[in-house]
Amino acid sequence: MVDFITTLDGYASGEGWPGFWGLEGPEYLEWLAGQDDDEYITLMGANTYRLMLNLGEDAEASPDAYSADEAASLTGLAAMPKVVFSSTLQPPLAWPNTQLVSRDAVEAVAEMKRTGEKPLRTLGSLTLCRSLMEAGLVDRFRVVMFPVITGRTGEERIYDGYSDFLLDMVESRTFDGRLQLVEYIPTRLDGPLKR
Image (cartoon, rainbow, N blue to C red; front, side, top):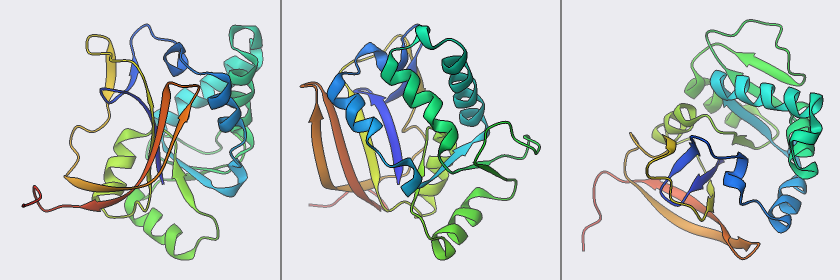
């Protein structure tokens, strides 16, 4: 499963914006905390690994800089099983429960899907997600959209470089009256749909 949080205009982050664009609410944070992180193996690239490791360490060292729910979410990332795809990182990795894979991510994920016992999901890692989508390895595509447009300050446009996909909605939910979760089954298209 590819799992993103985005602005309405498809950015993963924004210059000067706080985490969750400052719009997380109690209902969303409760849902997030209730996710069984041990149920999945979380996949990420080296940049996301470094970012989340630093955020987790910062939340542990300075918990007052975060809301209690945000700090618990960040520090809880250490316990979940993770696979990091990187040719630049070297073992041993600082984050516990993390396996380093230096070979091709698409080949490794295809093998993990064939032989693994747990479902896979991503965390951030825009390039990895794009590669997995292109290879047809994504069974579910889940997005939580935050009600903000960051046209001038948005960073990391998520969908640039993607092929065309048809998305069949299998779940939707609204959190705190403003955040929208949508989950789809993706189907790659050769071009625009014909009428």
